Image 1 (cartoon, rainbow, N blue to C red):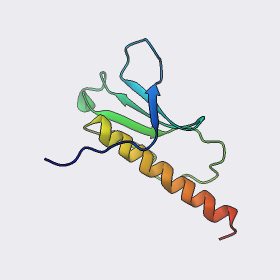
Image 2 (tube, rainbow, N blue to C red; image 1 turned 180 degrees about the horizontal axis):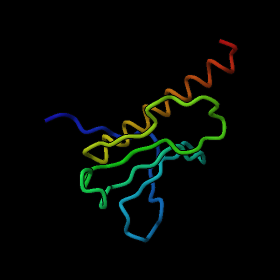
Image 3 (cartoon, rainbow, N blue to C red; image 1 turned 120 degrees about the horizontal axis):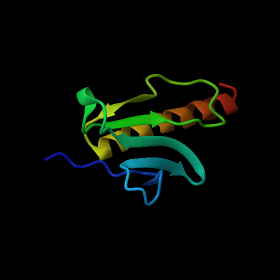
Length: 97
């Protein structure tokens, strides 16, 4: 059995106490992504939608910046990997490369 992805960043309920399967990822106080269980779209029912949210310092997006995964952990992985790429781009821009 494959090893389950372990999130690097903190994830918490987007709407605490409402019972939704909807979580936001945080790097300290900076929100960077979101995952949501799809309970509405018949073709994606039971899948996890992931997306990068607005990040003030991002000037150039990398696509795709959203998608679908079968598990919560895989959706987290996709968001966190995308966020890491954005952070790496920011570092290159800051150093003039």
